[in-house]
Image (cartoon, rainbow, N blue to C red):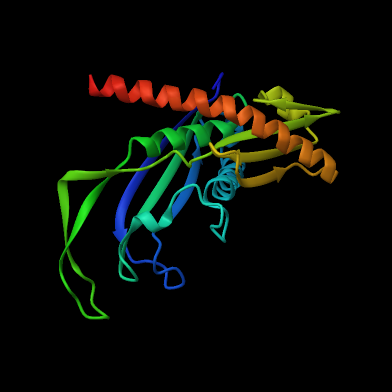
Length: 236
């Protein structure tokens, strides 16, 4: 996106569900900011930004700790309730940074999920309550993710009295605050996060949400068309 370049990957491993959510799989998101992208990413600066971006993506895509607004259907990751599930590890890497990292990472993750295939798992035999079931993981059959519910992330950066979409590094350096909103195809808000020390009046936040929802429609159309085109090229 502009001069910002990021890569997203998805890895899946079989694991055990959380005892508090036995009918759901698990997803974790982490971001690594390469020092090649920005000298400021060396050492502690890069670690702090990586953590900030990881937490923001978690809130925007997974609904935070509650998971109530999760863009990924965690129940689709369950293999045997209470015993076996898929654990998804989503990793983002910042290659170059010219601003608006969070939105770029959100777009990359949506694209990565759309091309992720989860092997079909056949439960070979019944097991007792305390035993892990025997399974056969297919090498040929895969389940594709339904990414229609994965939202686009739109960040509105407040500079003076104006909101800027897709802000550059220079514009971000002048911001008082920024609000990132994740909105899905149905116009539902999946998550919201704010950064910057300046407070915002509730009426301003509502106005920013309205603008973000409008922009997300265009962004989702663009993302979906790019993903479909890329998949068509791969099939050819």
